[in-house]
Image (cartoon, rainbow, N blue to C red):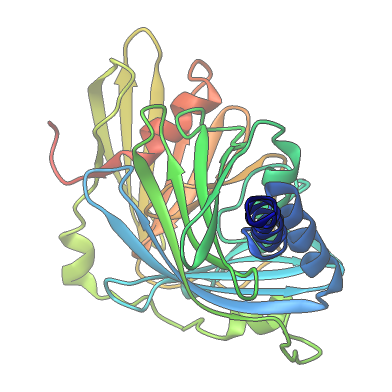
Amino acid sequence: MNKQVGIRSVIVLGFVLLLAACGGGEKSQEDVVEELEGKLDEMDGYKAQAEMTMNTGEEDQTYNIDIWYKKEDFYRVTLTNAADDKESQVILKNEDGVFVLTPELNKSFKFQTEWPENSSQPYLYQSLVNDIVKDGEAAFNADDTNYVFETKTNYQSNNNLPYQEIRFNKDDYTPVLVKVLDKDKEALVEVSFSNFDTNPSFEEDDFSMEKNMQTSATEDLPVSGEEESENFTPLFPLETAEAELTETKEVTTNNGERIIMTYTGEKNFTLVQEKLDVVPTLSSPKEVEGEIVNLGHAIGALSDNSIEWSKEGVNFYLASEELTKDELVNVAQSVQAKAVK
């Protein structure tokens, strides 16, 4: 009799422990994805701060990022170079379209694009969630504080970054850290979130182009004067698709100095760099039928045969009838050397 009671007690205890494990254990991948989608649906907007480090070039580049989102389709992403905390670029989406703004140069591009839906965006909450949902083979695990996913990415102009690791806080399902990985699973881009406010307030004109161009636009460039113009030192690409520099032409313009570099090889291309002494008057945005690309050192405007960007008071234009989009991006990312190597 006592033996039967003992066996019964062991069975009951095992059943109780099983129920406890089922009820109090870690959430499944499906549970977490459902929670993420629910949080995204419930939010009217968010404001977040993050630091993005990119080691896709000669030197690591670090940016401080302010991300604003207002439902349904308003975005403002400000990227500021952490090294000098001065030069900023703004990706803006409002009822008029998608823009990339460089306020210091009074320069703006308007894109014919479906951004941000057309590509992975490691600093946008909805992009991270959508990448997880779309990847039927996404890996999932959890540690003491975070839910961790590894998914495929969708970078149309960069096939060198096929994976990403995304960490969400277990308590509130906000993003903590995103690592964008190369084919060897090495992190080339890291976005670390320091703040994520899911109950923000916005001014009526926070997403207007006029307000965002005025925030830091100036009459003169941060570097100005004849001596600075005479000492304009061009940058060279480290990646040239096996082409060689065959001609360099310097041209003085009404607004500053222009350097035109011609590269010749199996695939030819031209790199133009222009340093302005005076910021031009604000004009209508230049319309681009192409993509917004993050080059690591700047935000670029990519079209079929060219890519444009601005950095430290210099406008860059890279054009080729022969380079693919991937190759255009690779060359542009590598334009960081101050001497030919």
